[in-house]
Length: 83
Image (cartoon, rainbow, N blue to C red):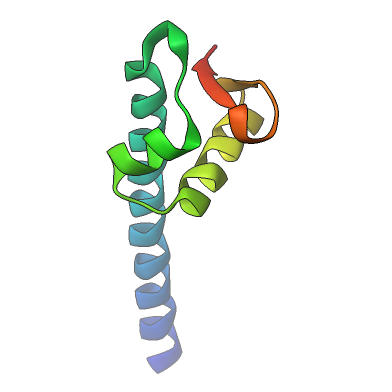
């Protein structure tokens, strides 16, 4: 019985963690959309979402891989745009 309890708690923890991740991903997506036609830099998304540049870049790449946004430019001059 103890294992079932731990299993349920672990599942709940995983579920809550997933909701938090979806909220962050949504915040990053909204920051890109709000940037308009000029696009958003990774730094501007990080500042708007109150996260590190590394975290913002990770979420931006995930959104790009999911097909919601695209990247224009290369290296430091990357801008992110909605599809």
